[in-house]
Length: 309
Image (cartoon, rainbow, N blue to C red; front, side, top):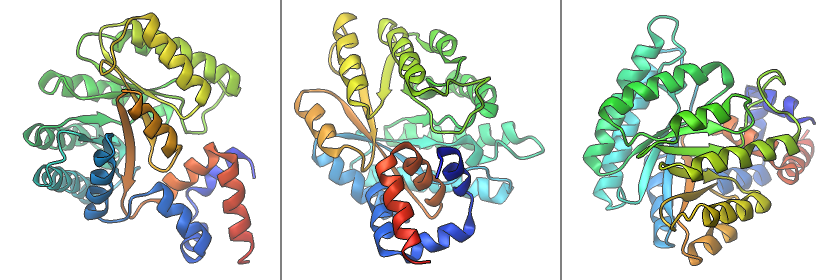
């Protein structure tokens, strides 16, 4: 099963139903997703914080085309932020937002609606004593997302951005966002993009990641280096030393369930390590994209589904 085919499978209702019934894949879901409820996200966040890590929580869902659903997602984030604050976790736990879940793709006034909902979440985060980072989605939303980010930062300058190294435009975006106080998460990218807008050779993606990391680490902003690649983790550390970045003036980020021992190693080494923790009912598309990134997990998934046919 190719990566592009697996990514298309992320939208398959039939395949999701199969996954939910198979014990092996249920365990795989639990490895990557905190659970379906707010209390699951709070519980897992507390466990990670107790190990010296920081966290960003994502309420799963995207591509919302219903105004009521978009408002409900915003309300869910406000409730989550209140729960994190009440649990004493908000100083170490922020939230990640997908603007398409807040109505960005609505046919009428989608950007304005998403901005309104994002403002509501940012205000709740500030009251809780934490921050928000805007996730980046497929390349067709990049300009819109960066435009909304610019509007949000007028009132909430602490709002974080995400840039995807495999997009050909990203080096320029890094230069634009590498300024004082700017929080930028750099990741490789997890969507199936056309070669005209994205690098498709893994070696080219790695080289682009390093070029972007250099720009961010050389600048006065706050880089958030999201990668599980051992070589890129090592290179990032070398670049931080080269640019005389003190520990705590940047951070590493990894996904919940991916290389947990490496996450702990970085914490022991004195690095700031933030874990991306997803939760919610809409876990299926997220899971399949994670499988597409890791061939060993893809194979496990295919075998477990095939065994039940």
